[in-house]
Amino acid sequence: MGVNLPLPSTRRLRGARKALLGVVGLAGFLVVWQLIPTLGLINSQYLPYVTDVAVRLSEETSDLAFWRRLGSTLAAWGIGLAVATLAAVVLGTVIGLVPFLRRATHTMVEFLRPIPSVALIPLAVLMFGIQRQAALVIIIYASFWQVFVQVIYGVADIDAVARDTARSFGLTRRERLSHLVMPTALPYVMTGLRLAAAVALILAITAEMVIGNPGLGRMIELSRSAGDSVGLYAFVVVTGLLGLLVNIVFRFIERRSLSWHQSVRGEEVL
Amino acid sequence: MTAHTSSITMTRRGPGVGSRIVASFLYALGLPFLLLVIWAIAATRSTNRFFPDPLTIFKAFVDTWIGPAFVEDVLPSLYRLGLGILASIVVGVAVGTVIGLVRWLRELLEPLLEFFRAIPPPVLIPVVMLLVGITDTMKVVVIVSGAVWPILLNTIEGVRATDSVMTETANSFQLTWWERLRFLVLPAASPRIMAGVRQGLSVALILMVISEMFASSSGLGYRIAYFQRNYLIAEMWSGVLLLGLVGVFLAVAFGLVERRVLRWYHGLREVSRA
Image (cartoon, rainbow over all chains, first blue to last red; front, side, top):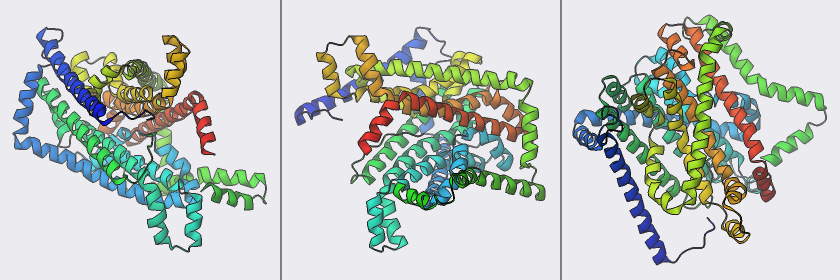
């Protein structure tokens, strides 16, 4: 971001312009969506009117059953993300700190990581049936690698001078972990957590669609098979908003927890 | 870390090159081999039929996939995957470059693009099925509709972050529109574009599998779901294995392409780090 800083007033003007254009873009999209079925470009059976979808959305959100489904999607997402993050941080720290383990597990990790988690869906269904546990297997598998890889990078990033200093000052293992390893690896963990949160949501909803455990994804699949296109689009919009919310919240958490840290890290792994 | 490991190899230089090769070979294959043996022993002891032993899976792998199934199921899947990835890259980079270069367009579309990126891609499968119908085109469209967003957004970011000194240099040298694109904008954006492509690849693979599980009578995803529904456990495992191999192959191929495309960039980073 090597741009010369504009004066505060012009910056505020630019911000206002940006927000205005953003709103115009959003409104334009909705108008185009409404016009396509109105003009008959696509049959409204396949692309329903935006107004119908909006009405359906407001109906759904006043229905308690909707919030229950949203809750069960979020529960699977939260449990999966928490378990995966915890396991990845512990395993990643141990493996990252011990060179022998790192070398010995390298091939295993490189083979397991690219396996698409959805390939495990049939296995999860066989093991757990149509239950939340089956969805959790998929969610945990996918989001584990996001955090794990970042933890390994983070632990490997420890400054050699800092490490030697810690050693010559005779810091105990616990002190070294909390004063040396943790601060170095934390930015990486946060990046991993943000990526994992998005991936976990994708797989929570995918699992509901394919496996059929209750939640938003199952509602999408049910609307599709019932030919209820208005409902289908309404639920797709809900999942998009949910994804947006998750992205914004985790970006915020990342920025807050790293306000002391200067790095702007590229996202090199999904 | 680097200093530490190098000191270890220094002390071990005594035994000679041969033993070092053996050591790294053991490191690479020791754990997978050990796990396979444990699995095999556990499989013969337990009565759980969902975990057949590795030899059975290997046999099922050969029986199932090497033969006509390769032509009927695997190749069409890979073809659609390849087509979808290619289309995503072309569309993502082309549209992303335009949006990245035109400021008002970027500000106009930014919230919308953020929303589309946030939609979990598999959710788009029913939508595309409605709009396109259940055809082969639909599966390619599904792959593109999910994989294009990371590429598009990363291209926009990359194009936007082109070094301003270089832009001004290009201005004063009066580069033509095409020259500027070819020698300034695209190379400057390429690290970000490649990061986007990497994200797009894994999304594309997921969508290939799911779209075939949903609406298909052939393909890898369909086969695996079919095996599971009919309790053909070893065959199902062999399908999971094959998907894993496809994933590994994609990752390796991407790594090679990336190293080639971004050779100058990695070189630059090495220099600035040293």
